[in-house]
Length: 187
Image (tube, rainbow, N blue to C red):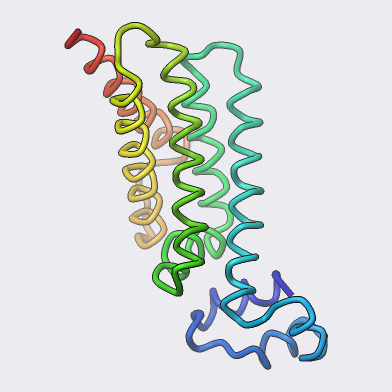
């Protein structure tokens, strides 16, 4: 049902997709749908959580495979961009289509963005433990997640991207590292 719902949401949007269309596309009955989900919104919450958990796991794997702390952010950013640009319906759904559906969906989205910011925080704190206050690292980490997502959204909307994933990842990594270096220089 997740795959069918995602495909329909990508093609028609959340509001223009009915439960009947989802079950017909998934080749299941409405009874089966309602045994699993209380509503279309509940399906979206579960779908968002599932997709975000998969993406987070991929980002963590990529970052953890990098032995040097200074390259962990690059590896995570690269993997995130790779996932988003090779799977635009997923990125579009998570970053755009699911916005404002409900408070439950927004909570899942906020938790995910906080989880990504926490990952940046861990790497930054390893690199700058004594030079920057924890609170400042948290704030910069949250801002970086917002900036990275804005780049993804803009690149999804613009069909003729001039920069590849590698170059975008390098630029975004420079932004992340630069923000922390700049902050640490103030101490």
